Amino acid sequence: MGTRSRIGETLDRLEPPPRAVDWSLLAFVVAEATTGLVSFTVGVPEGWPLFWLHRALGVAIVALLAWKLARVHRRLTDPGLWQRSTALSVMTLVAALGALATGVAWVFGLDVRLSHWTLLSVHVGFGLALVPLVAAHAATRFRLPRRVDFERRRTAVRYTVLLAAGAATYRLQQGVNDALDTAGSDRRFTGSQPREGDGNAAFPITSWVADDPDPIDRDDYRLRVDGLVSDPVDLAVDDLAAGHETEALLDCTSGWYTIQGWSGIRVGDLLDAAGNLGDNAAYIRFTSVTGYRWSLRIDEARDALLATHVGGERLSHGHGAPARLVAPERRGFQWVKWVTRVEVRSEYDLGQWAVTLVSGFD
Ligand SMILES: Nc1nc2c(c(=O)[nH]1)N[C@H]1C(S)=C(S)[C@@H](COP(=O)(O)O)O[C@H]1N2
Ligand SMILES: [Mo]
View 1 (cartoon, rainbow, N blue to C red):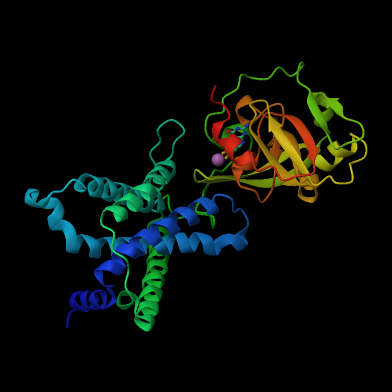
View 2 (cartoon, protein in one colour):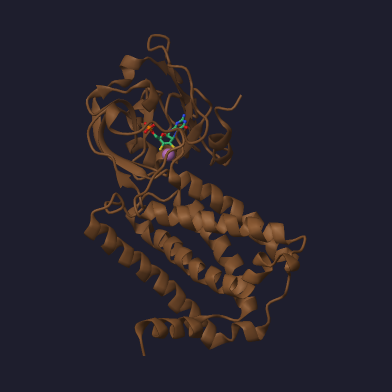
């Protein structure tokens, strides 16, 4: 027996019943969106399984989609079989293929840029569009799954093999990328690629969504430190250039990272300048001139830095001058730029999630 037919036979044996393929596609797409979004908040190496799950699920979707298309392609290619729901099916297929193709291309180190959008941003766009599409598509052809579709032992084996094969395919791809030394070869566990060099010019200027403030006048600038403190203060730029140095890795969710030497003032020292903290102080909130904001628990915040310099240079406007948050182990979107207020608070700030998406829009 040839290798091809053996692979074909294995695939046939793995193929779940039609209804199970459909429900698995829905479940896997939801799981992909979830793991993808949650991975944006993960910056510590212990979080690696989440990234591998996202990859394995993605490859598994390729197999599920192939089985599905082998079964239904005539409904798309034969005009006699077109229904009102066919347009929705086609849109769902386009979003699925778009998400898969951009994901695969990204893994191989391909990137095209549309202003500050990377191929990874396009991948996220397709992925987010896919969730409601696949849900609506499922609703138009709703068939409850039956017990026979998910017969226990076979199902467990099938899905384990499917995910393992997905992970193995990703691993194989890493080998190929390394051997060919492509732009996809050098990656952090998050999938981000390095930007080498020191200082402002070494790494991209990135806005999470729409922030693009006017440059801040250094002489007029004041940093307000207030909230649950005994003596709120306003500090000038020179008060912040305290020369405290730290090396930290900035990992942006658009797919790059850089290691830089940052200097400025330790947030712990900043808080000390504002007297005593209130009894129920628990979070430190950093707010940008644009309204963009993020909070850290006090212990983490104390060791974070409000940086005025990077790589020995004064921060450029694009990188957040006069001062930006450097939050080691956090993903880039939490490193608030153009910070004008540091506030001690008692409660977790749920609103920050929404604000980072809408700040910068008028
Ligand atoms: N105020 C503000 N701070 C921000 C952002 C933003 O859009 N507004 N973008 C964040 C994102 S997504 C990243 S990756 C880093 C990028 O920092 P850089 O532009 O210096 O590379 O800043 C973060 N800080
Ligand atoms: Mo980012």
